[in-house]
Length: 262
Image (cartoon, rainbow, N blue to C red):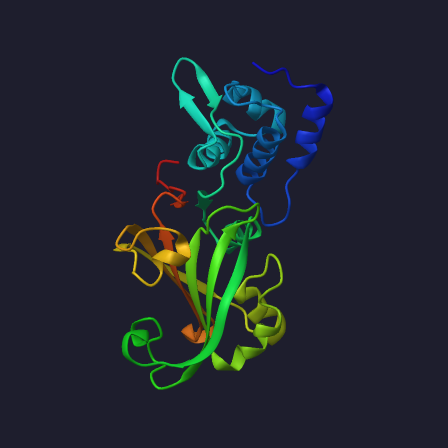
């Protein structure tokens, strides 16, 4: 088992100070990931116990478990009853776990990835596109065909098509900037605030024309994630259609339960 120097522990604690818009469990998960990547905890080592991590970062046991779930989802650790939490990999190149409870979490997810624009074009909303852009039939929308990668490299996490209302076409000037999200560009450049995000997730077979881009087989299992961004009075601002190959992405969702006897 590794012994963590005091200086390293101090740096880790500093790294875990809350940042605006980032959940505490994610901050601690990022700090632990950084420690594993730097070799503070080598493959085969035991991580500190939940209680030790909670004490070090000033967390509840529940929040500590959420942080460890992130590492587990990335394939970095293995949690074994009666033994502890073992480090089983130093890095994760192609799997990403997003715990998304609000738009702040979604922003954090994007900052850990990078977007590569393959093409941009104007498309007429007709045929199959109508199901993604209801009420926009016959209109011309701006479409970006993209791949999203882990920030540190590896296979693409997803193939994504982004559809943007024509009045927001100026975002094309900045869409290639690091850590950039389309809805943030719409808000910053046009002053149109996103008031609601709707997400639908379903299982599909990877389309034959998308499989080579993702480095997977046609027909292989994949997640189809539709995200719809709405403004005032449910105005449709943008839509993203995402295809995630099997074993490269996982979404976890948390609900706070309110009971009459609380």
